[in-house]
Amino acid sequence: MQQYLDLCEHIINDGTWIENERTGKRCLTVINADLVYDVKNNQFPLITTRKSFWKAAIAELLGYIRGYDNAADFRVLGAKTWDANANDNSQWLNNPHRKGTDDMGRVYGVQGRAWSKPDGGCIDQLAKIIDNLTKGVDDRGEILSFYNPGEFHMGCLRPCMHTHNFSLLGDTLYLTSFQRSCDVPLGLNFNQVQVFTLLALVAQITGNKAGVAYHKIVNAHIYEDQLPQMRDIQLKRQPFTSPQLAINPDIKSLHDLETWVTLDDFDVTSYEHHDAIKYPFSV
Image (cartoon, rainbow, N blue to C red; front, side, top):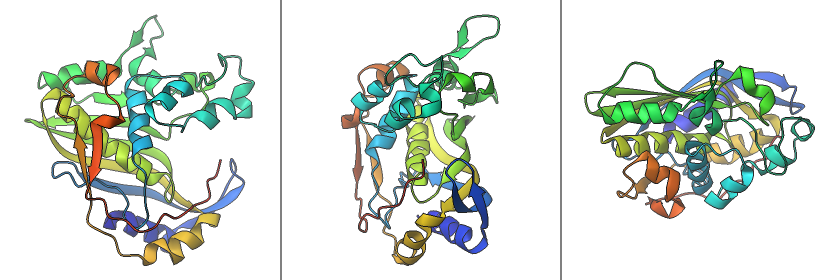
């Protein structure tokens, strides 16, 4: 929790004002932010200086693991995060690759489970990683990448959190996740939850111990209309102790994650928090 607050202070004190062309808003920006999550000791990085919601983040992660390309499938899991990008993005609505209502195209989990090969067929990156790690193998290339510039035109959104690199030392699994851009007041806690949970899940289904997750953000920013809430409210609050994440121990394979797992198989305990803060969202 403290590292999150330190990052917010760093952006406010040392950030540079940048005009964001996509949103038409100014934002305070810093380059390179590193966060570390202690998955081994189950210190779940859920923000405590405001009420934060974790279920949609895990639901979206499950959709990525399953390679979903339709917002309706994400809604069934409990995540509405793709509704706007699939159905309200004017550029995507006019894209000839769009298949219809709720179609997202070749984004995120589609790339992770079915990366197109130029000579035909596709690569299931995640299945290869799970297979290797289950056998105790780390070929120094246990990398799950969603960033495929050759197919950006075939999806509604290019990925922000784009690469997850697993590393196995003995029987302890580590994760380094890379993010190109991050709305710190709104989006970061969503991403923190996913990085932590991804390592915890993959360690569990491959029979390894979870170690540490490293989260690297290239462009971390706070929008101008978010600044008063962050500076004058959230940063003046004292954080509580980190909660813990409980995962159903019956989840034992990638097949389980692909088929029967739901949000009922996850729970957060000992979550103390301050009141919610409504931050403006920049589309």
